[in-house]
Image (cartoon, rainbow, N blue to C red; front, side):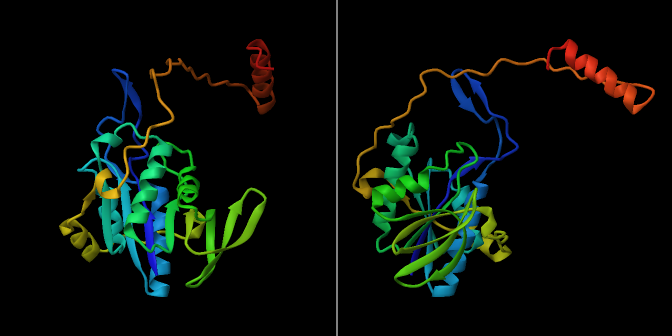
Length: 257
């Protein structure tokens, strides 16, 4: 069984985004693997272990953006591929979906393509479904458990607002994974050493056999939101009833109610 897992390199979640000279900047925040994608890597490794498969991890980015790929290799993935091309600098989700679908086709004979639920920097959650549509594969999104997997079919549980939904599909298929699937494993010491030495091949658009997809969304202007001055006032009183009465008067005076 051949499995692909797509990961994204994102700024650390503690980073603060700002706009500098009309460009979005994360400052000097370290770049890490998208936390949601760790669950996808864990699911891929579990299923590869259960069915004797291999896991290839794919990411889009600049030539030096390999931290996410090396993290996935350290977790246990067999090989990593970076898709990088100067023409992809302004890619949106539509363009990224077309590029990742081409990369999955280029790997060849893929049975399962795993994705995280969403990325912490864009938070759209639409990429897995878009890739599935381009590939012409079924999309099983928000998967919290995989109960059955064979060479021909898969059965999963989807975590939806109303509860749990059981869905079956034939392979190949795109699967996006939620954190309910299970805690991702920590990279082992030997895995980290192996990942540090790994030579990661870089595929450009020519190797994928496609031209740069035109982005659908553009940002003609970006600016920082205006700062809001916030003050805090502690209301004191002789008793809880006294404090509550003062708070009620304050709320009425500020016309909150």
